[in-house]
Length: 395
Ligand code: FEO
Image (cartoon, rainbow, N blue to C red; front, side, top):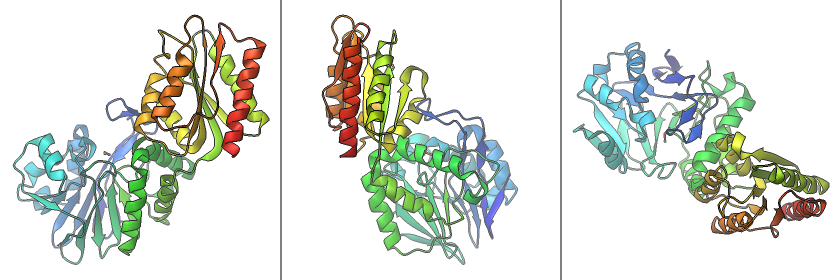
């Protein structure tokens, strides 16, 4: 269904209610997603971004509900990832005279994905294309979140279309931020930021300052996923600035996996120590918990305490993916600690501590190991570790 966002500007995107995994199977999307695409009618007709290929026919019908696709003069591909570019082959077939506008790095990514001789034009920050009463203005947004990412601003209409930035994987019956549950909206917005944008936080901050310095009036921010920020649109910009600063809450996340409950008992004892010092904590058993949700919790928190029993001289395989995320997402301003049970060789705590150091997460206190099932003295050592972590959090 098409929605008119403002006079002659239409949302012609797709709501994907059933999406549960994104980026292959890398990212969980409990509330589905949308692939937003915008059609602008002026003296020239402009299409901003497309859709994911499985939905291309339905999306073309949305365009047809507004205009004959052959009349599209300009297609803007703000970013090449297939959830936004998947409709390009179809639309370029139906609008053979359309010019395809991409960022300078988009020349490489779009060409590399589709190998088509389309009528490309590469633009850079500050380039403008008049389309009648209004004008397209382009802002390269390198690494937000790909090298090719770009924002398109519709001057005269005060509409910013920043592609993935400010988005949420959030399927709803509505198109605007003021129409949906605010708690759900922000749960999805922060999950999106934590899992996708965290490593680029210094660039996020810089880009926001650069865009604000341009002094462009903004009445609406229309990202490529989720709802459109219409009510107080700059609220998400201010929130991104806060998230980009990575100033964590004075809390702790304990994540662990266990084979015979020994490491679970240790996790709970660590929690007891944190509580005794008045530091709130959450415990996640990684074998049964969604990894992306835990990443969101890690993003928010100061301390990351990781536990695993020793298996094959290392950690349980369920712990390895989140260790890899800690490396790749480059969290700032965290502290860490490690614990785990063992029966024979007992390397897991050392493996975790070395990994934390590689991730530039300082280890707040020495790790705790317990041989076989933890004895009272082992659990007391875990509680003391919780207290030490809590003191470091409060400091
Ligand atoms: Fe980077 Fe929504 O794709």
